Length: 212
Image 1 (cartoon, rainbow, N blue to C red):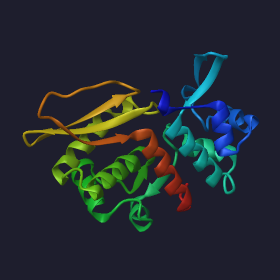
Image 2 (image 1 turned 90 degrees about the vertical axis):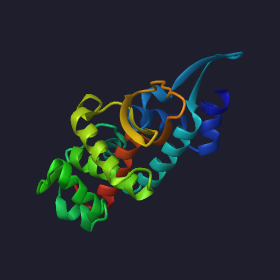
Image 3 (image 1 turned 45 degrees about the horizontal axis):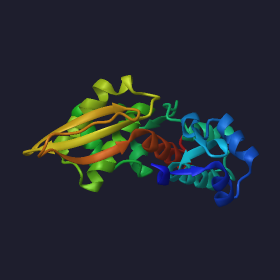
């Protein structure tokens, strides 16, 4: 566990940012409150962070902050849904999703002329998993139905999608936070998607494409 954390002192030295920048980004919700972990050490209380997450986040902030304000970055990096609406044709034209994904989406959930952010998110997650080969088209239909029926319970929270198979039978789960889980023998976890990371990625794509 200790190897997965980085101290505040080491973080500032490794990234070259200042104490003031770190806490200004925290106040703007660019860095989640739960990533600031207080632990007792021989010198007293110190602040630590999940190493991989905080280093990746700071690198992303550095890359984006030249072209976006802190408020705009806060919206991009927030796990909350965006108010963006996208015409269906533009999703394909801007390569947000493929024609194959759009056709499958239409079979399961219909095809609106304008996609709200949540529908865009569902299509984007489906597209990524299909493109990776992790799930089949039939499993993609299960994924869309699961998201459509249950995602509202998880929206705005840190959550994950799990896809598992046993003896050729697949199932899809939505889990929230750092929930621990285990499967019985013979069940294989074939895909695990962090929805907050996908939302961040999607918002960046939409912004870069001039959408919203």
